[in-house]
Length: 120
Length: 107
Image (cartoon, rainbow over all chains, first blue to last red; front, side):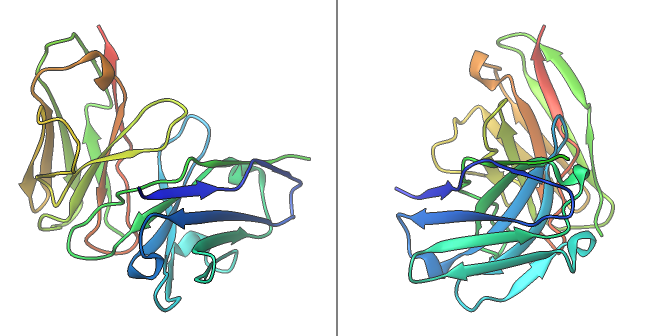
């Protein structure tokens, strides 16, 4: 069965960086992309960006350009999202989701979420 | 960027009720729309993609319709497990924006 398992919660100080991992299993990793979505406390869903696990192509949300980097390690079927220069408003649950980026497909499998808290 | 609005933002309903949620896009997106259900503390769950295609394993009381700029999610007979927040998402272009959500609560 398809599973996306994310790394554990993080507490960071403002200005620091965080790197969240998302380990995929149950499907051919390179046949799909991974999108990252975050959700601030009590708020809605915000799409952060996408990476192709096939060729590493990326597509980032403009507001995060320059602060976010998404990568994959095909040898371990793991996707990573690094966010730098953290601010208090980056406090959120971060999700990875399988994103085929074909036709009108949605995000069909999600990780369990990783809480990132930014606090001095 | 394509903006999505949802109405209502909050809905109070009873078990057995028929519930309809509307999602409007700021420009035409053909049928490139998905619907998700999210329960507190859980990841979103894909219900419908391509505006009207039911994701595998999702109960048939959920249905979606629409194209262009106006879309609806209908729950034909609300069940206790359906009390949650529902989000639409456009997958027509980047950024893959989400609607602000509709919370369905128990009357």
